[in-house]
Length: 604
Image (cartoon, rainbow, N blue to C red; front, side):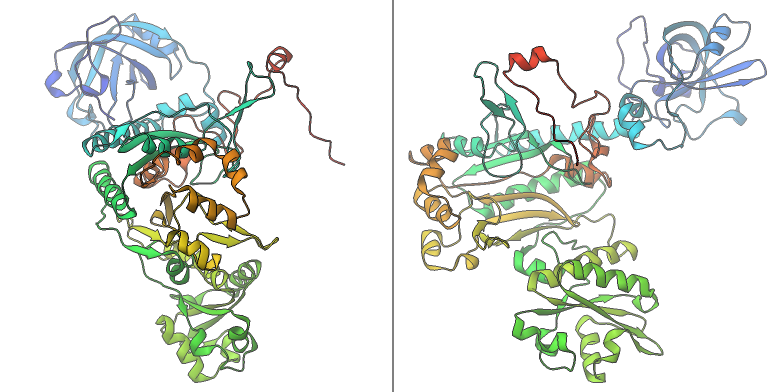
């Protein structure tokens, strides 16, 4: 990351190390930075000086000194990553010593004076060079990891991303509002992070899982369009696309808006972000997929649409019509028969197919396969189906000789989900997806309710504050399992970027929806008092969404893990190795907060 802005003259530097070019030959310059590397060539000492925020390509210049200069002995004795300020003359490198890999590779600086600003101990890992460091060491010494270049480059893009979001949203008439960090605990969603109150013994604040209620209250208060890059806190497990503890989202809400209004604004924002911050391609409008359709065709509600390889339903063709019991019995059990093409799958090992069958079994479905070997069909299905049935199965997914067909039999969602993971795996292995394409899509028409597998009771599938499609009439007249909600997800390349909804702003509809999920009116009032009360004083219809800021950046930067786009991330077990958090506190602090620690029971 090169920074060629002019600097104010001070005692440390008057020029960026990475800014020097052949046109500067003859200039006397004052530079400051870190010693990146040293090379002693028989009386000549060469030092690579790396400037703040620099990288090996753009922020480094070579210094040269020899034993006649006082600086020689001092520089010789310093470890790499010590910090120095030098004054010297810019000279041209000889033709045979020009380094074309560096922007400054045509020049070097002959050192005339030196000031040591700080010294470095022996490093826990190598900062310069290509040698990889373990993630634990990188997080524990994050400041050293930053000096290696890529982390700071991604932080710079993160800053440009935030600035672009603010500029764009302001241009679109959105008002940036900061909502509270200390708030009330919510009975819904993930686990809260609780903050004990010193002034009110036994009572707690909670860090917001999202500004959900506050942004809806802003709509009631007359704010027409709101946004913020909001910090959110959830006590949940880590995974590659989710940071434990905290994350940021581009939170927005619109009054007098439908889901189509939200789609338009998000598509404008995403298109601009992709165009201005990356070389990737995308197109608008984003396609819409009903939730049920996405699961049926792709085995997931966050499909990667950069390639086809769709799941086929062959229940009608093979269910109840073969001599194979699992196919024959499927319709009577309400089960589906799904099929997926595995290109070039005829050459895969038996171990791979057995792994698929085992994974399917763990999801409660039966997995089997057919290999279309040029010498003849192979696999379990080849022995159970007629030639005509084998041809029907192959034709359903477009299989050719050399391919394989995977099948599942079971409940509708599970049968597709078992194939969805394999579809994603095949897409990666076979390079089916264009790495430069960003295939955004809207997944819509989510079910409002789902049954709890253990209790059989109805529960909210997603956001309980969403407006049911059909409103009060649907809640009264339809089976809860048939009610859809105005809920939507923004997905891209197999990654969920955001969830949003048209909000349920009417108390009568809210009361009826919560009643299906087992809440009486009193529980609603006590669980969500601010929102419940506000909705009795003229709330406008409103809708919103909150795309994940970190996830979008991870996608733009082609990073497999969210930690790579965060300055100071927690590790996979939610520990801050740099600062040593979480950590015990002393008895005085606990007494002040009226708390005591109850150790967990010892394992028996």
